Image (cartoon, rainbow, N blue to C red):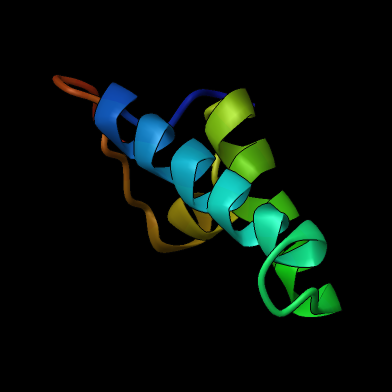
Length: 65
């Protein structure tokens, strides 16, 4: 897996992932908050399978594979 997410993209994904996961513990306490695992993991790893599928990359100066 090659990195296909830029720094800002990764930060945004991690923040959104944590915010969604917090819905499991606070607020409405719904299990839908577990959806936050996806953006959290893709932000940490730096690879998004959907970007790969569509040939996208948010890395500066790097062309998608």
